[in-house]
Length: 326
Ligand code: FUB
Image 1: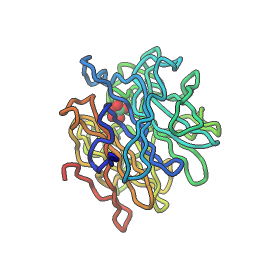
Image 2 (image 1 turned 90 degrees about the vertical axis):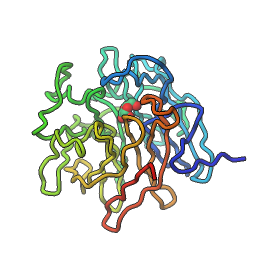
Image 3 (image 1 turned 45 degrees about the vertical axis):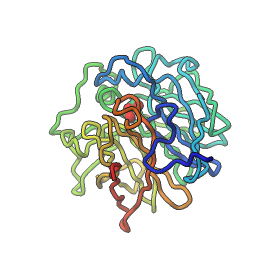
């Protein structure tokens, strides 16, 4: 009998998965998650508990089918520049090639973003010898626009090291920005045609309120923490992200992929576990939110499971908030 995946239940139970980036490729839903390890190592604000070493690809024919694990598609030991921590990945299709974008710590313990390629959405993926020059921090999300331009969004505070780049170079001792000043935004860089390098230096994205004022660093219900995702609906760009310390997935809208993005509201209320991370995808004229929580592991923060829920828009393009407990 088919093991149909129901909404708000783990896509798979045999491994822990997190940070799902969902895409429709070749008519199916492909999910590119992190692969959480079952270990008893240290746990701290630096994210040492997220000690992932490899990636698996998952897929579903549709939302009335089982979820297939295509197995290990890339391992840290096969990526020359990587020391540790394969965190939240994303995938994109261009040039007849599938690209897997992933953050990891380099040999100097600095998070960078790498690329690996495949002829199939299910992998396996072959890594480039080095990370993308000029890349830093975590959680790459690649958006290929209608004009075929591809943009990489990235960034994450604390363990993700974004605040350590405020001066333009890496400063291990840098603090969060002042709570009364503008919050740090994620960064954007257009990718070159070959998808393995930046066409421009990463720029910070500004997230503002309805009056045009920047969201402040102390406004933890709204400020960017990590896990950026960009999608387009009715000619609007939607930037959604995790607020980290307050555990929401929220979103902001713009007419331009570079922003500024105007804060709009919440997409997902807090889930079980500290982290929350999502993606948004359209399939057969309906929209879906992929997210993770820690329910399968009984609340262990670094043992998460990927789930999905239908996402609905209001007539004005705003998004209806999803409460995962209902
Ligand atoms: O999975 C490791 C990190 O936890 C991700 O990169 C963050 O977005 C958070 O989910």
